Image 1 (cartoon, helix red, strand yellow):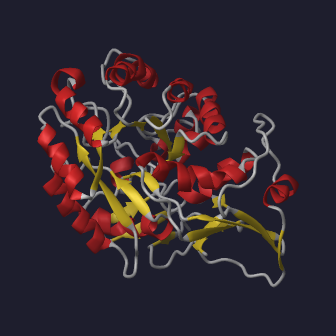
Image 2 (image 1 turned 45 degrees about the vertical axis):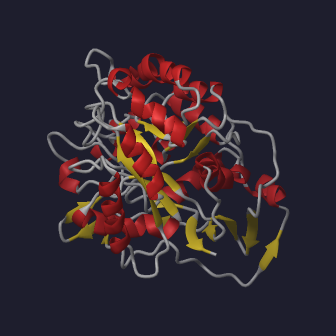
Length: 405
């Protein structure tokens, strides 16, 4: 029988307790207990900050600074109420995407949406939503000034019209219609968050990121070198190379768990897999390997952004299924899996806890979270009055359970 749970009866933070407890040198422990991936070799390094690996009995525990999620879809209405507890239980802050219906195009709308999120949080939660505006052909530079002064809007999101879920109101001509807004953003030190794909029907869906870099992103950065840009959910070796070639501190990238763990075969193995369908679409294995190498190298240019994107099950399993993977309940466990398999657990904390706030110019969190290497089964689905949501890796066994320290 498939396991179906609600957030109230599934607790990923329940850990086994062990009497025996001792500390060992952080990286020494990794070298003795973690086998690095044969295909990836990285130099050893010391833990930054307070990152500690502990051995409790036969289990490992890793204590890190509490992470943030720099790319998050919380939706609204019933869906917001359903999913926000998962993100709030693991992350201190989240950059909240504005692609609602209607989109969040003004500061006033962002403030109102923020209030809705805060009301939906579980009692006692200290999660902080960081709001964004949805860039359109008619966005006014004065709106950027208002956004900056609000103290609650932290970025502006570029959706090329038609690129992804609820992007029909997105930009049709970035340089022809949005340049004054982009110039004001550079003045206000307001980052531009980019869904980096062209939407030209003549461009193959697997090539749209590379073409976007060549025809839009590179010319944009050359024209406005002081504009801070985050290339979101990068999926190709081309994006990795491009971000690495740009000036550090001005161009960065978020990376999802699915683009670190899955390739495009995952869409078709055993039949069509709608819950592995997202945009940008999964790519070849060579691209996945390049992204893993980049994030586990210790580069400050890459940081966590789950792109957790919930849809009700019937909207995924349909004749025209929605794009998006719901990863919030298991994202930290999946990132830890990637870094462990690469022999780079010493670099996990920087990726999930430091690089993001450093790029945004925000303080790092002071609270801690513990990841315990204890096996648990991901629920087959989460059930709500309106329907079901299928999480990433549904029904599979994972390790590295998070809990507050």
